[in-house]
Image (tube, rainbow, N blue to C red; front, side, top):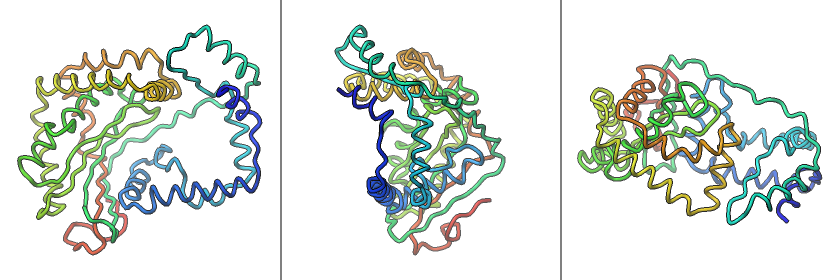
Length: 335
C-alpha cells in the first residue's frame, strides 16, 4: 500500500492553489518556530551564510522567508516535474522481509513509471578559506551566551576524505560525554564553562565543518570561556591526543553503532542518506570496522590538517544589553 501511494504521488500530485497557500503558511510558521524565534538558530543560519563562500550549504534548507513567500504555482510544479522520478529516488525497506517479495513490488509500482531526464549532480567546490571571520548576534531573549569556532573540513566524499574517520574519532575524544577532553577540563576541572564540546559530520556530498563551542559558567564572562577553549585546543594541537583516548573513543563509537541497529527507522534513514549522496550500503556496513582501524597518528594528522591558522569563523551569541566589552559591536561583523 505504501509503495502504491508513493508511486501515485510521484506522478499524479495535484497542485490545488488553496492547498499551496495553506502549506506555505505551515512552512513559514515552521521557519518562525524553529529559526526566527530562536536566537541560537538564527545565529547558526547567519554563520553558515558567512562561512560558505561558494557552496550552497550556506543557504538554509527550508529557504529564506522571502523565498517561501515568493514561490509561485509554476515554480513548485516545475520543481516537481524535474526531480520527482523513480530514477532519482532511493527505496529502503528494513525489517523481516525478503528481497524476493520486495523487488517485484518495487518493479510493479515504480518500474512502470517513466524516467525523467534528471541533471547530473553539480560538483560544487568551496575555495580555500584564507581570512578569519566573526559573526555576532545580540538578542534580548539570550540568557546564556555562547561562543563557537568552525573550520572547513573534508567529508566522506569531499576533499581529503581519508581524514573523515579519524575526525569522527577526534570529536568523540574531545566531546564524547562527561569524561571527554573538553568537558572534563573546562567544565569539571577549571569550572570556566557551563558546557563545552565539538562537532563534525562526515556524511555530506560537499565540505564538512569541524567546530568547537563553549558557554561560560556562572560568574565567568564569554571572553573567559572562549580564551580557555582556545588555550585548550592549542594544547591539544601541540601535544596531540593519546592512544588510550583514541581506543576508548573507538569503543564508544562502535558500541553506539551496534545499539543503533535496534531501530528499524534509524537503519533505514542511515542507509537511505548514504546511498542518496553517492555512498553504498557496504560503506554503512563497514563503518564500525573502519572506525576500529583508526590509529592515534591518523587522528593527530587529521586534526592538524583541519585546524590551520587561517580561515576559521567565530560566532558569538550575546544578550542585547551586553557590554561592548564582550568584544564586538551589534550585528554581524567579518574580519
